[in-house]
Length: 238
Image (cartoon, rainbow, N blue to C red; front, side, top):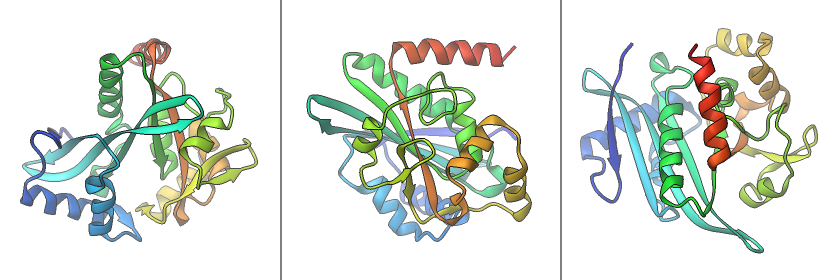
């Protein structure tokens, strides 16, 4: 189904009262173990971000999903000062599709990098399910953790210091978030049986994803990433 999108920027035009209520309903229908008001306050209203971008997804003027992008700075480790881009998204279950928000997240990340290419920029996200991880990992050039992309634990210690350590990869790449994407028993069973590389890998690293545990993922945003991702997406479209 073809959805209409509406883009908002917090410093310019932000959510109306009706749109805010609609977003709350999407949060409630998308996640288990979540109080919509608490989720909204944490991701939409905290002052830890210097910029927020939001895309609403609409079907016949009804908000059925959203993708929120936040930009924060000040994270540092010795001489390493970085900008961290995070995304959170939710959809009413029948509108959920792998890759729904990938293009938007990628576009906003590279757009910011083009405005400040001298900065160290990373996209970091908590992936709640194997489908979320695969939608990104199969399209992006470099992503950590990944079975074919090695990295050190330093960035995970920096960005996910309070997270949990995965001995399989020797990375602090797990984070308990409490919320769970609403999947049917049939969908959960399909994840367990899947032979797709990204889904199989995700389930091995994070078997407790349906109990509130998320996989913490880091994607570097730089020129090499742009080239590799463009190359990968070009040949996927063939």
